[in-house]
Structure formats: C-alpha cells, structure tokens
Image (cartoon, rainbow, N blue to C red; front, side, top):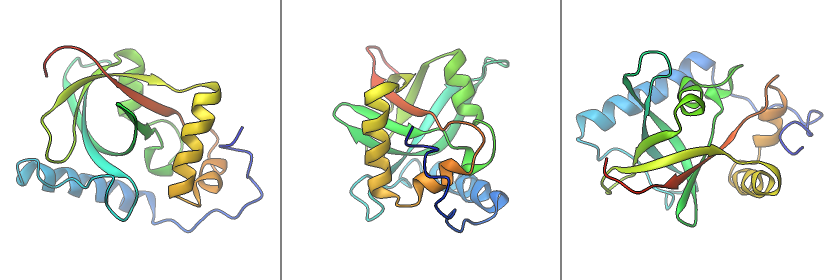
Length: 161
C-alpha cells in the first residue's frame, strides 16, 4: 500500500506535535475572529486549501469544529485524517466514523452539508497519489506511523447547513 510502503525513506523533519496542533488552533481562532475569512484555497501556493469542518461529537452529541487541509476531486473534497502526524486518528475522523454527516465551509463560500466516507482501493490509491504530488514527504511521514492514514472523501449531500 502506498501509505506505509516507503518505510526506508527518511522521515521529513517536522515541527513538534504540540506546535502543529497549536498552529491549527491559532488558525481556527483567526478564522473565528475574521468572520470566516481566514482560510486559504486550493489556488494557494501550497496546492491544497483549508476548510472548516463541523462534525457531531460521537459521545457528546455536540457540534465540534476544526480546520483541516483539503484538495478538490470534482464535486468532492478530500482530506487526510492524519492527526498532525501523531499516533492515532484525529477526533474529527472518529466523530465522522460514528456520524458521517457534517458541514464544511470553504473560503469565500457558504457552509454546505456533506457526507464523509473513507476512500478504499483504487480510489484511495489515486487520491493518495494526488496528495503525494503536493507533499513529497507524505509517504515517509505516513510510513512512520503505526496506523494507516485514512483518506476521507466529503461528498455533497442535499439539505441545508
């Protein structure tokens, strides 16, 4: 499988996990303070965008919002459930596994309802390759984790946010 196959490659240098998590918390705060204007799009030089994802807590039943990276795949949005490259899966992915209906908000767009699912097989390989084309160290980072990194597809669903 492409995510863990490259264990011989050197793991790219990362900031400490606390820094990565703090960065995303600050980003979420700036997004909130700016009224939702502080998100970048896939047109950025990074090659991927950031969106606000609102899930329903699997235990609490309360709304939970995070800022995550995404790429576009036709009408779908695609994210990696990577938990800042820490071990384990991020809470937002665990929430989506329990309750796949969510809401996303991209830069300069209104919120919209989506349904999340894990990409598998050929689709997963194709989407992983697209992410790897943007982030050359992706395979090495994923290979350093003991769990598989889910590729999450957000499909539009009917309804209002």
